Structures are given as structure tokens and as C-alpha cells.
Amino acid sequence: MSLLIKAILGAVIVVLIGILAKTGHYYIAGLIPLFPTFALIAHYIVGTERGTEALRATILFGIWSIIPYLIYLISLYYFTASMKLPLALLSAVACWSASAYVLIKVWAHFYNP
Image (cartoon, rainbow, N blue to C red; front, side, top):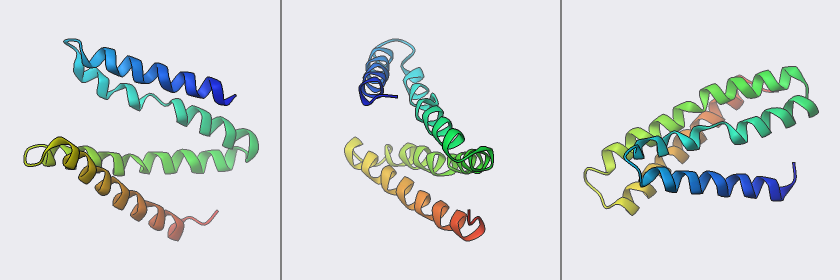
């Protein structure tokens, strides 16, 4: 896939989020980033270049990667009650980063491809 197509796809998603955020269904804007755009690309590349076994390992890691995202959402929900939005977002990203780091370390310890 060319870089231009990826950039256009990303721009379309950002515009869609912006449009949905202004409607009465603003909460759907939180669902749009979860569309597996980049997962589709990653799974196609891994599946064609590394084979089915590597693809299945990538899928399993993707299942576990929901944990850092959940930690991000929970921490952001908590932080928005007591912090200004920019600091709450930054703090939630820090929580995501820490939990993603732990996930990668644990995965590497138990699964060595």
C-alpha cells in the first residue's frame, strides 16, 4: 500500500471523528479509532511475509494489547474528574505507555519467537 493511500485513509478517519464529535452521537467518535485499519495492514504484512504462525502470534499479542488501551481509558476517565484535559490526556498516555512496556516485557519473557 502506498504512503499516499495510508495518509488519505488517516485523514478520512480524522475528518469522520471530527464530524461525529459535533453530532448528537458524539460518543461514536470513540469507536472510530478502534476500526482495525492499521491491524489490517499489519496482519496482511505479517501474514504474507512471515507466514501463518507469526500471524497467529501477532493476533494473540493484539488480543493482549487491549489491556494497555483499557488502562488508558480507565485512567483518562479518572483523571478528567480532577485535572485539566491536556494534563489528563498526557497522564493517561503515560499510563498506556507504562502498561504497554510491561506487556512487551512480559510477552518477550514468555514468548520468544
